[in-house]
Image 1 (cartoon, rainbow, N blue to C red):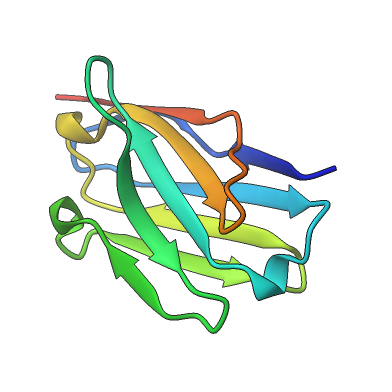
Image 2: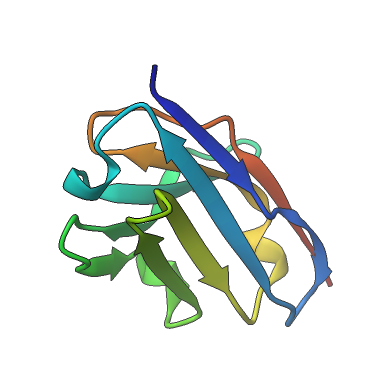
Length: 112
């Protein structure tokens, strides 16, 4: 049974930082690309970052160098380090594996 469990969300002030984690189980983590998505109220879910099985990463245009995606294959964990957070980064953040399974999401709230 595939499980993706996000953690690390919370409330921060503008300019602050958070690191999200996604613990994976039930599939071959090291062999799949992993992604972070986010969704704000009234908006479509959008890609934040993706990291391939070999470690190549790409980001949504809005990231502008503020976020870093990484993976720990030994621990089967995906991370998203976020700095310089802004109110527009407020959203529920989800991890997703290449096979299309989603986590339940973790809320990030950035206040001005």
